[in-house]
Length: 330
View 1 (cartoon, rainbow, N blue to C red):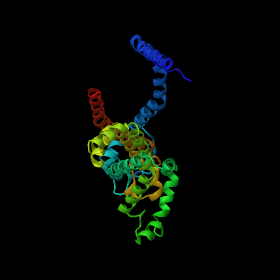
View 2 (cartoon, rainbow, N blue to C red):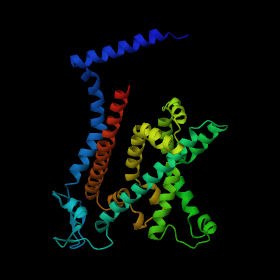
View 3 (cartoon, one colour):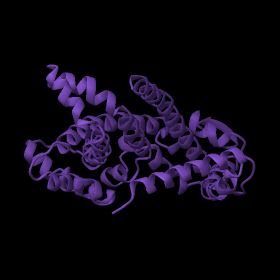
View 4 (cartoon, rainbow, N blue to C red):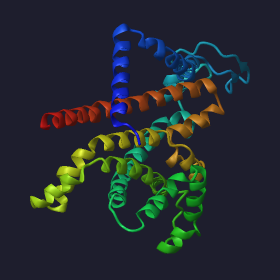
């Protein structure tokens, strides 16, 4: 049998050791190797991509038919995407309609649209699934295992599965009695991608929220029932406030994942411009020019960073206030 007092003494000992390291400044001895590893794994690729984004792509100049070496490009790679400016005959002109340079803002709009819709549906459906899985009933373990199956399936397999279902003579059209080109038309293709992505990722959201629900004391609900609170009042005044920290983390993780969406729409809808996300545009551009693609990658990285910073600032501040309120209540 374990000794609780011994475990408590060890915990206090580790806490005292950590405090002593912080006071003496020796904590950097243990932190430095991790920072160096992160600098190599994360810092160098980011720095290299930014460096490449200010260089010209070498290749054949279509206006002159001559091979052009790379060189200093300045901000031309960025204006190519942000202002949709292209080079033709040594002059700066607007990118022709249909080229990748003219599709940047459309890809950004598609990415943000899919992110907002998918994360919203994931949150609502995942919360409902988590509340069901959090209840005690016969067969709960089997239900939890079955719910996680879509999340465990590789994304490429999921994309092919839903592509078959959304084909013109597929299951969806036969069940609905419709004749819609789900993966070819603009809005049907977006709807198909949303359905497939929510089907796959809602279990992940449910798993994160279930962990948050299980730390809420059951006594709080019992006390609310005794006071006459309805099920809706218990949900809005107990579940949601106490679940907010876990909900914040789940929304943040899912938003970052949705902003990087690539393989699902790329496989399901192939070259449909209506579902071309920023990540798909980056991959398409890599085949034409790595330096221009590096600029696009940098822009996409800054977009994702800005969204993450906004979510952490807004939702993180609320979480801190909630913890302070809980400490004051105690």
